[in-house]
Image 1 (tube, rainbow, N blue to C red):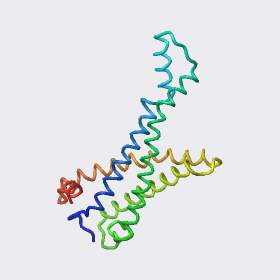
Image 2: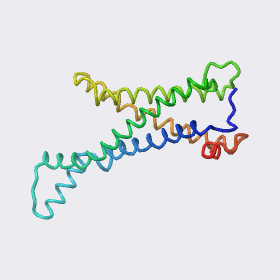
Image 3: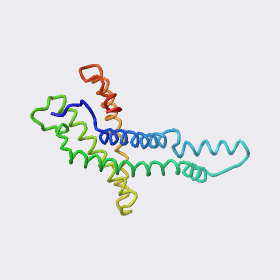
Image 4: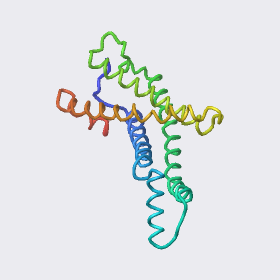
Length: 188
């Protein structure tokens, strides 16, 4: 069974690369759903312009808001490309090095290890689904855009529970016999 005595540089690069790129993407999504939601921003724009005696229609204000959010959405797309490359590299890495510790069907794995493996496989299936739907939104046929966008937006609901489980797992590991796992993931 795989032990986490050290993590090779490529393993750490892929882990942290995915973590950072996906967190940036999550930030863009949360901003679009909250502070930078187009109708909320349009109301702020309308009010701000009204304070200096400039009147705009709701549609104009929404268009201004979309323009402001457009730059942020480009970052979402750029980081989506990075996630695509990193997740593909991660799959190749797992295939090449036979990381059997991620097999939930391994007979010698403990129940804890099997649970961890299932969580990671569900996570990577979700990431793969996000990547495919994101690429289809950008490059696919317009006829499927609505369905694909719906699926792509659902991605948020696997990512947040995964982050929660991952952080909880880190705290549990650090308080048991797996102490130092964070240091190993940073420094090898």
